[in-house]
Structure formats: structure tokens, C-alpha cells
Image (cartoon, rainbow, N blue to C red; front, top):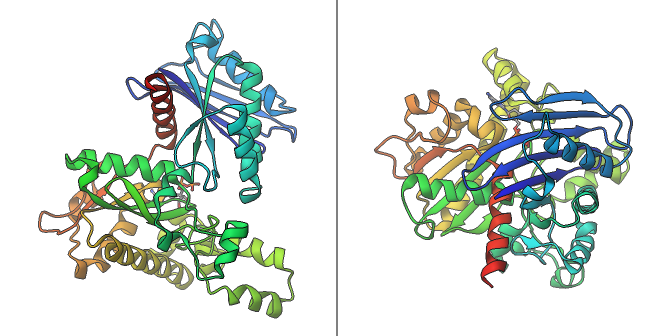
Length: 404
Ligand code: ADP
């Protein structure tokens, strides 16, 4: 089936048309600067020069969807004859609260529940909802499915999702760990089982999704049992610009000592912290930090070492949670591309039986085993593909409905 995957932000819309039978991308692109003037449209067709890009005004998301559908169905540039050839649209939705344990066919009732979840992700869910509404306008007869960043983590046991605060706040306000990057963790844990040649039910894996945003998940038999991001994506390991887990009193102390307001302190923790803040605002990009590290830059060394240390701590904790892991898998921008980050992490895990194969770690591309034969825990690097994960989940939902 051809599935159009839509990832809609407040001023941008990323899209990808995927043939799920062959797991191939037919075309992909981006509508930029929606609603703010100076819009730009990108359209790429796999294995063809039919693609193009152009400046185009997008006064709203409807125009963006209209533009992409025109490109996809155009007699010259198009990849389908008619919009009816698109079997379904899979929408990325950041927050499904505790209402969605898996992807859902979008009915008016489901829309209302997604709207209810907006207060948990006020920057993201409203834009995702707008994406659904715009697609509905342009493709009223096409099946729509919502795929949630949080759904994969709904299997967390109570002991993992509760915080040590009065229980009434969980009951009244739903303050609990949700976890994010679910599509990536689900996809990569399945791929890990596949590359091991095992049934996913029989493997315990620790998935390290290390990008600008980053999270680590303990997956037992295909189920997420703990994950480093929490009530929001600010929690967990140190990220590009986000602080990760903190003593909550630090927020209080920063307000008091800097004289800045609470909102400004929260902005700092989201955008000026992490590797960027620790490196004296040198860079949030791991490539820059590595280069500066090699040149002996003290701030970069401090940021890099702290980043590695926190990841090692989480992996150690999740090995305990799982009662031992069969595999550790690195994915996303840093996890897939930085052999030195992987090496520094794995070298510190030697005491837990992790032995890297330096040659395999340094050389090669794509999904591969990078641990030595003597390693008690297998280590892999596997490219994540959130869009493919959304497309496959969309087909699963439709198949289930057809069977049911
Ligand atoms: P996100 O989707 O969270 O924005 P990505 O998964 O695309 O992030 O990862 C982006 C990060 O990947 C960049 O900030 C950069 O630090 C890192 N990265 C990409 N390529 C490399 C590389 N070759 N070596 C080290 N880090 C890299």
C-alpha cells in the first residue's frame, strides 16, 4: 500500500510517500515557513530527477497539503495518477497521553481525544491536529491513522512511570512518565531482533536513540519497560541543548540566583543547556564537540565526558532493570554516525561484559554488529526510520480493522 506520512509542525510540514509492500520511499519533501511568509517547497523523487524545489507562499497548512498533493499527482512531476492511489495517511502525533497504547484510526471521537492531549504537548499536538484537518480537506475519502510518540511506552509498569510525588497529582493531573521517540524505539528494537535472527519476544535490548533530542529505552520482549524521557522530553540524558534529569531544587535555585523568571529558566534548560551549555555555548552539534575535543578544548572535553557518563549510567541502570541485556543498539544522528561516542560508551561498560569490535565500529555503514565475539552483550548500530515506522503502523491498523 502507498502510505503518505505527514509530520506536521507549527510552521513546517514534512512528508514522505512510502510503498509499504517493498518498504521503499517513493518521494519525500518539506513545506517550510507555513503562515510566516517566505515559504519554500521541496519535493524529491527516489531514483528520478522529476523532483524540484520552489519558493511558494503557504498562508496556512491547507495550502501546504494542497501543494504537495499537486506535486505528487502532477502529470509531469507526479508519482501517482490520482490521489485515490494513496491508500492511507499516517500522521505523526507527539502526545497520546495515556489514552493511546497503539496507533489509532482517526474518527471524530479519536480527534477529540487527541485534542484533549494537547495540554500535555502544547507546542506539538495542535500542529499535528492541524495536519490531520488539512489532509481531510484535500483528501476527504482517504483513511487517516494517528501514530503516537508516546504509545510504545504505555507498557511501562506503574513502578517505572510514577514519580515520587503525592499520588493524588498523578490521579488529578496525570503527572507521570510518558516517554517519547516511541516510533524510533519500536522500529529499532524490532530491527535489532531481526538482525539477531531472533523472535522479538525472546530478546532484551537497550535502545540508545542519540540525536539532538535523545532517549534510552529498555525493551523486554518487544515491550518498553523503562525509558529516560519523562513527563516531557526534557528529562533523561544530557542532549544537544536540553539539560536532562536534574534535582528539581535547581530550578528554584536558578530563579533565585539569576533573578530570571521561571519561564526564562525553563527556556534555558530546554535551549541553552545540555552539550551546548556545558561546552560554554560552543556548539550543540556532536561533530563540533568532537573536533574541539580532539584539539584539546577543555570546555568540549567537559561536555563530551559528562554526556558519555550520563549515558553509561542509564545503560547500567537498564541492564539492572532488564536483569541483563542481550543487545545494546545505537541509533539516530549521533548513535548511527559517531563511532567515537559509541566507543567511549562501550569502553566504560567493559565491566558489564561489553566488548566492542573496533574495526566494525569504525568502518562500515548501515545496520551492523559492532561488538566482538567475546562480548557478553551484542552491540549494534541500526539506522532509525521513524517515517517507515509510521507507515508500517498505519498499515497494521488498517489490516486489524479489515480482519476485525
Ligand atoms: P534530531 O532528529 O533529534 O534533530 P538527529 O537524529 O538528526 O537529531 O541527530 C542530529 C545530530 O547528529 C547532530 O546534532 C549531530 O550532533 C549528530 N551527528 C550527525 N552526524 C554525525 C557524525 N558524523 N558524527 C557525530 N555526530 C553526528
